[in-house]
Length: 385
Image 1 (spheres, rainbow, N blue to C red):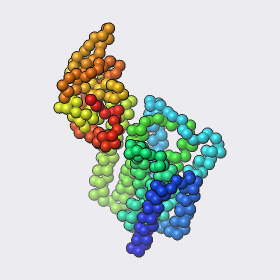
Image 2 (cartoon, helix red, strand yellow):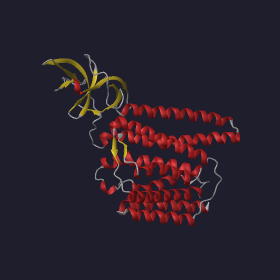
Image 3 (cartoon, rainbow, N blue to C red):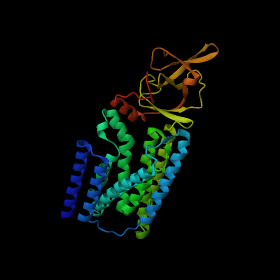
Image 4 (tube, helix red, strand yellow):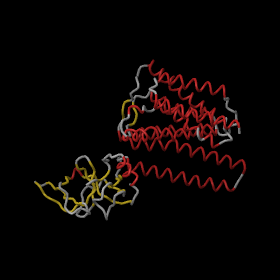
């Protein structure tokens, strides 16, 4: 118990120190690197991790390697549709070597700190789960500089794009180290970090798809490792209850994968169907604010009374087509919001049509709408009057 109090004090101290340095100082990268390395070495010799027999090392290594290779295959395949961008890292050999060495030093140091904290608290799980927060905070200076952000929108965007995936990744890495050791966590980090210094181009997936993919990867690896742990534990104790648990976990995994695939399909705008959150009341009654609509992009020849999505002055509007106007042998569509008294003040050209609304899903778009309104940011993916 005394040792657990000591480790808890150390972890709380690390959290406070990390937050203080993050917001109070502008630390040079190499100064940061020196602090992380020194902290890692000091903690290793002062609090040597307890060695526990590992049963899942090889299984976890294979899961990590296969999953990350699959991740690269999927993202580069999507890149052929969405495009690629050149990395900002120098192509000079010496610079690449320096980047590799410094990157590996940060990875090894943080994973060493993670292992020391976990292995010294193997039987105090409530303390163990402070570890991903600490390692996340130690990693933040390599991800973002908060002094560059001036608005809530900038901070929220950085959180979604960079910090949230990093936080989830750290929970997965903590579980990996808890079940095996730091070698597998270092492998995970290295496979995702080091190639960026050598590969000249990366898929330009856009913010939304990048967020989904970078969140999905660590969750998928975590679920796979949990499955392996459960199955092996079941073989050891031959418990019927764990068989049922294994089935439930597999069903949950399948559902999670399906949900993620559907989200990617409907939001990446690469396929026939896409989704849109409704942010106004102009279609109230038939389509309410906070609903999500599914749009068929292949159906761009609407008939009277069809609900269509179209571009208008840099936004996407969802209104009903009420009439057709001929002008010099070209058809223009007259639209109207069901809750509006008059028709729209514009004519819609065929090339402005995104597609026809095929399905309405109630209330599912409220998180998107609420966040947009909270940040006072007009979303180009949300319908407005």
